[in-house]
Length: 73
Image: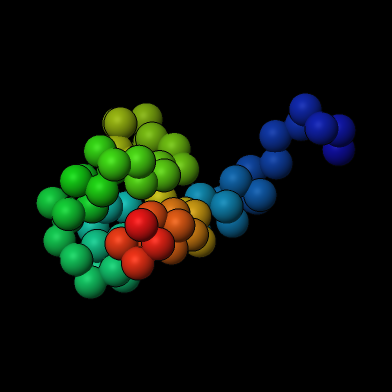
């Protein structure tokens, strides 16, 4: 398989680890509204679904939150 060949199995593994707004809000124990507010401040979105819905990588989100916490300001 060369670098330009799309492997659907890899995509399934990668996207299955991405979270919706609802899933992320449950993991972070916050509201969906707060997730949307955080997006305005730069919360990293991994990609938008074909319908325009954001998907988040939890590791990236936690790193962003660590870097942007009030303790570090």
